[in-house]
Length: 546
Image (tube, rainbow, N blue to C red; front, side, top):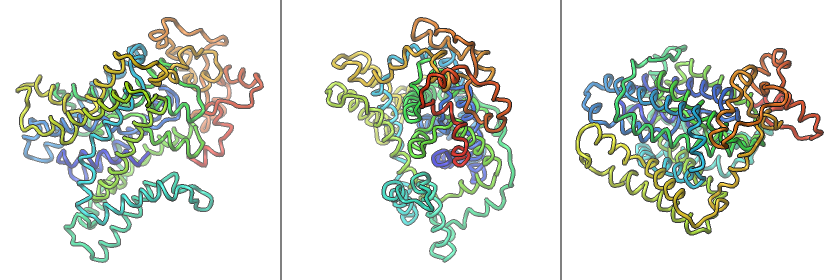
């Protein structure tokens, strides 16, 4: 959960004019909001054991805001940081509300048929490739630390994952974290040995005093950087980032359900999850994280490695993130990481984003020339038009003219993910030459007729907790927009599902709130129970992982 989340402040805060202390403040804030968003998603969202964290999908739009001429004209770094953060906050609040509306009104459920794995793959791939300009360039500031960071990450991720320490797959679970600790330790040792001057970008001595000056305890709170500022040039491109984030999450939901052994989510469940993510984006805007939150693909890989698809474990992780955020020195410590180390991490993490995007093509027929054309055309032109070194990124002036409309148009055509989304969705939805199976849609459509209120597996996994299931009827109306009919009502009434952190903390209270679906499932004589619903049966393993 920490691995990719803390990278976002290290990328955007220096460009905003932030000091080390302010970067640490943003670092703590994004940890707190990520933990809170994780609790919301696993409680009232799609209910899958999926972690929420800062989204790289928002970075192209954030950089468009940072380098807007209005904000760049502010000479004082402190004033520019606060004005830029307030503008980003205003945009996040607006797009978060829009995302909530798209999810809870059922609009996305009806639009889901236009989104295929091809579109998801192209958009996520464009997100990763669109960030390559800020990766290896920073490594050159200190070759020793940058290349060591990359080398250790490659070593632990690819060559040592099967090596166990006292029977524990340490390198398989924490390869990036171990690489950070070892590289940073090397930097500290060489600095203490006098290998570098104090003002060298390799040295750690110039920034460590910020850690000593930071307070031990600090609570992130809303509007800590000032009241939000609402600008159209910031909001419109941020909507594109929101759409890209939503599309990325759709693929993550299906992957998480598949790996954790849960039935595939229906369009209504997906809409519910995206609406919960919208709440997280609004919270990001209120608190000031610099980027919205989304589902983390890295968490899905952790489920595959550990075999623990536990909602309670993920919720414990969310609580841990919120607790860590209160320790202000921890956030400032991460903010003092040498830039070359952070850039080495970018080379690894951004590459994984590209790989995750391409992995969505596993159910697509890549022998079909039509599919290959759409994929290649969308990804290549997203870079050629809007990527680093692309047409719009090399212009000295706005070709659309002046004013807000011109600024909005430029921000749209400067976003690789927006270009990839428009190209891939339009071409894939309007051209023939491929069946739905060849487009990879048949796997997603398995859940279209699921009886979500009576099927024991769906009730156990996706039903809302305790009284919320009865109060909101599991948001069953969201299924109507895609099916044209309401789901069948539950035979035994709406009951909440189990497997939450509350089961661990207050088992006596939750024991009387078992859903009838779980009982019916047990009576069926099937030895295999829904893995998420029966987390309590693996409580020992869950506590170990927590």
